[in-house]
Length: 295
Image 1: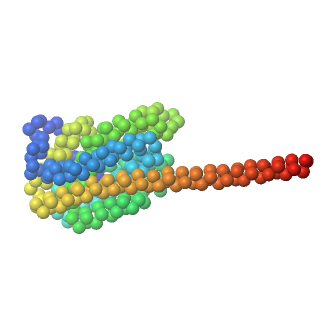
Image 2 (image 1 turned 90 degrees about the vertical axis):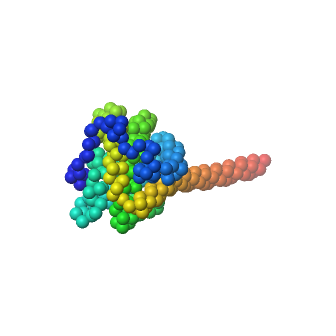
Image 3 (image 1 turned 120 degrees about the vertical axis):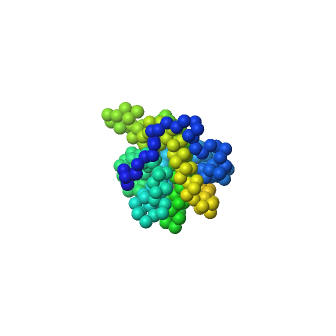
């Protein structure tokens, strides 16, 4: 589907006066979303930053987080492409002009997950965590009822990657022990196999982000009612809340596994200790009986 959608000026350099919206434009939908979600944004940013640092120490934790976000982006794009292919959709043209093929994350996320899960799709193709399933089902339902809600996801989720993609890519590439050894490949080549999700095939990522924000504002300014804009803002708040829920869910899942492992370890060690003490007591009494017989 992405091959059918044309990029709008992805390589055109913007001059200063062409940068839209200006950060002081309080009427711009993107700015309104940012203002209304600022507290939630700061909260999830701190949460993800902390958990990401932990994930980089363990590739199993990292791939769990990547898998969680993969399902969200995959669902967004499946819903978006279905809308773009629907000739009867009143939102088809608007969404087509906002969307850029270079933004697509589904195939890139799948490439990374194939790398971390040893080419076994069965381990990641279906969401299994409750919050992930809830999020994916919600996206499908709300977009089916109100396709313009996709504009909340196209702002929140993709601009987050634009803003942090290079930083994330750099942190992942420098993480020691995160990448498995691949015979015949240099470290730099291995890193590329596992960092597709945070990479964009554009000449200038900063300019691409500005172009995207410009098109988003120009196409949403007069094509949406105030009620629709309010619904998009409300959905943006939900996105931040649900992302935090998914991140916390992974933390609780891993803590439960660690606790179970330590409980099993303690039980196993405890059982062995009881067995050892029993043997020592038996040996003690056997020795005493032996001395009593020889006395």
